Length: 425
Ligand code: ASP
Ligand code: MG
Image (tube, rainbow, N blue to C red):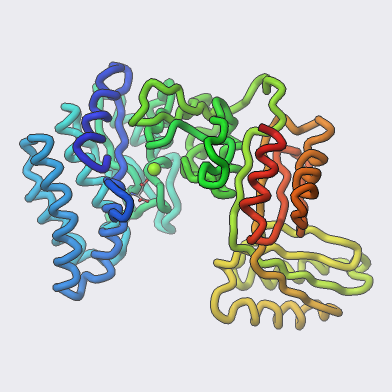
């Protein structure tokens, strides 16, 4: 949605198939490298709301982008009125959410005119509970009832409304989530997610040149891959669709002929494909705890984990030996003094013989239903790593056999992804 050309492409796509009835839009992204996304500008406006000069400088950029877009598209919408309302609203709002949501709001207003469809505000149909948790049941009823009478509508992505009438956003990239909510509410035949790449790649194209495109993957595989760093679709996007058979189809706005990637509930027949994709994520720390006879000490794990819980830290993985356990924790949970305090608390709680901390750990996930009940996938992964002289620091594979997680030094991550990719594709 970055500029006039993109908007016109979207218009052609929607109009080329009459069954495309509900359109969820995101805010304008970057037009060129170095450009700033509208959502990021809005967050900054909120931060500077009490400093008039800084606020005005930022808001004028937003004003200019939307005004230009409306002029380029020769629309009749009174964009100034909406921009004034937003500018005023940001100065008055108490939370960043309202500000951040306005990129989608303004874009949806514009898109409604472009497509000749009704604008329906997400705040009317997408609801949160008092605690700020997405209220799936209420939302679903509202979406189903409101949209059943519509021939077509444009709905802004990324946000909904709290019981007190204030705006709340989802996490970044949350328009994908809104798309899934609307698809579920209207029981769509398909949730098409139009983006700027041809689909889901088997691995990160910044690491492997021109990786194979995944034609079909399952909801579960999508979650595993997106959680571990594949950024095409928000990892939560399948939640609203659980219990339905609505497929998600990732498509490229700039290459609409390409069929893209289908994300479906169950993948039948793997065509002999062992793995579906490989993803990697940087930024983990391992805390290794050693204590003789740990295995005999009932409740040892619980005590250690209760320390993490008190610090509201989420554990990623926990491989154990007879007298050792390793905690793999995202660095983002260990900022400031937390790491030091955590270690002191663990010492106090379980009196270990030793605690070591390893920094700069990265995790990679080798994901695919095809590997379950099949011998040889792990062998292939570790042979590729061994041949490239990459030291494995951690291994985790659950009994679902849908993924193998490998920990390596961050310095080795890209090479590890590349050699595993070439072993399978
Ligand atoms: N505009 C929001 C963001 O930048 C939501 C989205 O793009 O999906 O995160
Ligand atoms: Mg997106």
